View 1 (cartoon, one colour):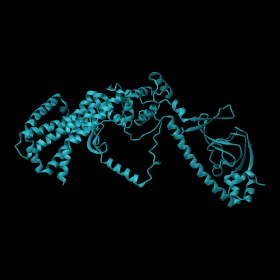
View 2 (cartoon, one colour; view 1 turned 135 degrees about the horizontal axis):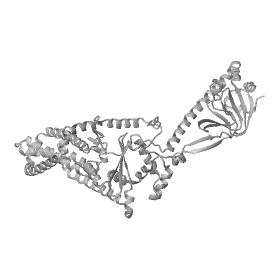
View 3 (cartoon, rainbow over the protein chains, first blue to last red; view 1 turned 90 degrees about the horizontal axis):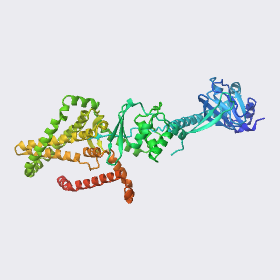
Length: 170
Length: 407
């Protein structure tokens, strides 16, 4: 049986009913309370999460006890996908902003898809690439916004080569 | 103007499981920002005399970048407050209490100028570069931009001009600024004037000699003007050295973007007295006066003929050039204008007067509210307009002659 919400997940939108049913057997459901941490920055990464309900905040540590909020994920979104491909530590922290239900796809299960269902894996990877690109664009935008914030906060407004004051005797 | 940028932060405490979200608006932080000017070893500030408009200006020099800022009294107040201990909100409040309401955009404008001169501490924002995002997409605008850039390339700077001027000054240039040199110049000018009056009845003969060789005379005049204008600028620079100030640049550029001319950037003289500035302004035209005088004396001693006519013509041309240079009301920032601006202690008179033009009709409709500074600007504009018109009318016959000659 295929959970209804899987059809709304962008990552799986190219999969047919049969593939979704095969995938569903590899996903593990998890309930998370509001405020709980799903994973922390620097934790070992080994799974991807798909949001069925609730709202997840992704944040990155800045200094002291302060993180910068990078993004929010809602129903149908997924996060933690980097953990499927490399074993590097988590690059950000995921908190549940509200009570949420997540579905977890761990690296072992993903490898099984790659080996047993290559066509399904190709469709998922294609979607992953599209989402990576979108997120990279969003990251650029975020970097721009952060720099704009810094400039505005310090009143910095460079006007290169603008004449200031001077006397050229002729 | 876009909305201020916002940062969303997530905070948590060690003993608390949950977290708090805070959105911080850049505007909010801006008012808490405590601008800090560089240490005093990095800049030099000179109070200018009280101007004819009753205001006082200050010239602030960035020693690191060798750039200058003209601060009015409001900006000076703010500059004094930029000590790194007071936030912009506190500074604005202090200004409000001591001076009454003021335009808050002044703070942003001043910060922009100070950042431009590197006079405010910045925290490694050097990776920023001019944006290409708004680059001109059309071919014709690109051609226009590149054309203007080519035009600007006509300008050039003499490398290490200050060192060059220092050497010339030390190796004899200082003699030119000795009082004896000044009185000798005045004497030769007076003598030459008397001789010119005596030669004046022969002006008709001189003119016929010169008309006989139009290309030779034009070439001679142009070469003389070119050489004398180089000397003129060098004298400005040497006068600046005489007061111990730096010559920032020397070179060749298009004055107001059109008139090709030599120049010496003597902005550093603003760090000295008003007298020093006026002496620097006068040093240039003195070259034309003295060389013109020598030419007239030479003409008086020469035997009648083309040589005498040429010397007389050159003498008169150099005197006229000195007069034009010293006349302040021609919309150009020539020496006469600089002297006027220095005497009035209104260094931006021309720019302020030109900025007044778009609102002129509106300001004149309510004459009673026109301020003293604006009356000065109006006076400057009116005299410039009348002078230029008179100059054009007086030279209409010359234009006619030129047209006739070309036919």
